Image (cartoon, rainbow, N blue to C red; front, side, top):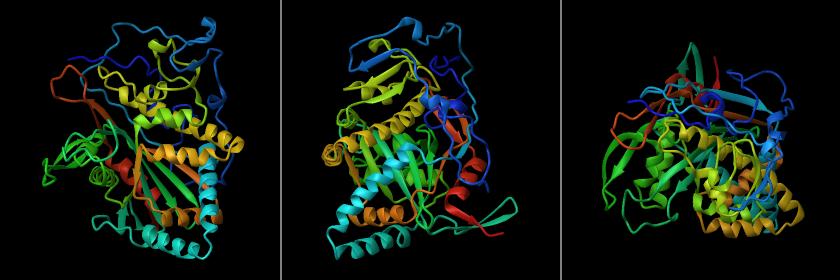
Length: 425
């Protein structure tokens, strides 16, 4: 059976899976001894003259400025599409990272006002994040390619999960109906240096997932897409833990205990709370009369559409969606910086809005400790990674194409060693 290739994927899968799909090609390498240099991406600054306010209305569009693409109806490929992905980049501190610094600094200042409680909160957060995080299945010492590595206990990992669900929260005990973890990222913070690593995990990555009965009793593990891990829980804490466990298994069982989960339905109100987000569209949206390459200001329900839409009849649809999600996050961070600069109350408004659509086990003491790390060291370096692997069509017979992404074991090991370990010999 032959299956269609997503016409919105004009670049290679390697280019699209990288966060934002707008950066320069990345070198496939380990840590560099070169200093942290400032690099700007021309693509990030490029825009077309087709401007929209994408709240469902078309305001102005010059057809000569649109970037339209002709696709042959015969474009197809075999039932197995293989694409290799492994990206590692060391680059300037991006805007979204600087925004995180601002947010942490604000939270830190607020906590500092409490006075004497600050030191207690900081110590508790340090113990919680650095000392107590543990996973008996991970290896403290690893031998790889003739070298020895030890686990760096100064590294703290956070799972950032975007959930496709009616709502984030209890689902009346109906296990298997809690939605899917459509966006999966792991942020690793080196609390000793301020170095940050971002690992993007494709939603279709195959991994052993714990399955439970409707009353929450463990049944078995089954190999399936990581996005399904969230469904096998209560829609709250157990779903979050099941997804973080699955992400840990993908990444050689390294400790990942802290999570922040956002229901994708919260994107629209969070988007509008900062006045909308402007991007160069990576996809065609005929209903909004938007073509790939058009500059668009995202407003209203289109925010959710932009980060969620995918063609289930194409095997690579999730790769394009991952690129749009990452692009949107970076653009959102830039707009957030502007919004906070002009109106400081934006932070409290966002917090109140986000609380309706999110859940987390990151405590006030955790935030206090992280804020102190950021203020002490700054964000000294940002590395971005995507796991190398092969995308295949599922062998199951279905009207839709079910993609399966098989992570390359060497790629996973190299990323894990870069992000969580120190080489000692």
